[in-house]
Image 1 (spheres, rainbow, N blue to C red):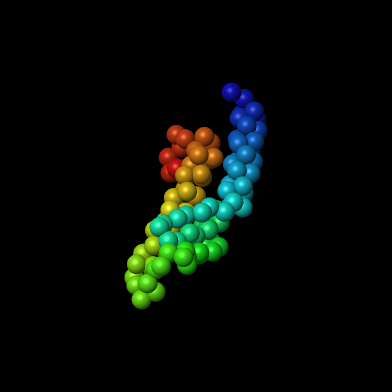
Image 2: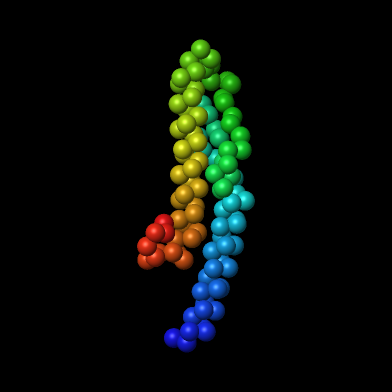
Length: 99
């Protein structure tokens, strides 16, 4: 393959990867556990935490609430990783060190 054509193709791929990454970064992912819902930006910045106030949760049981927040946050992070792999994996498959 012509080196100039290969370079042009790599530049086009790089633009596509950057565009897809920007879409992911600007998206908000929701993670949930039984009583907690969190929203996390694609940049993995926590946006909000919502606690189901109708659940009858005993506020004295903060350990359980803390665990639910962790579970919901981890759920959102996994969704971000999955979306990143789905969107960018086609560009990086077979390249060591990427997804």
